[in-house]
Length: 117
Image (tube, rainbow, N blue to C red):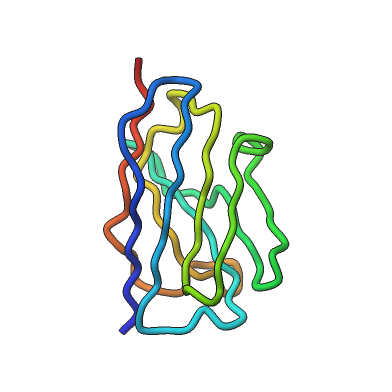
């Protein structure tokens, strides 16, 4: 049973930064492509960043240059550094493995990010 535990969210002012963490238990990341998704109120969940086992990353256009995804394969963990946050980044953030361009595992609880003055 794979368990995903996201943490690091919170309330931050516009322009601020947060670092999200995702701990994976019950499975080795192995060669999995890993991603961070987010779901804003009333919207569908969307993939904002992903990273291959070797560290190659991709970003959704709205977060390019502001977010950085990374992973520590030895620790079975994935991170998302978020800078220059704005109100449109307010959402619940989730991590997951990606297979055939779809999330692989059951979702964790996510971590709430709220950007507000």
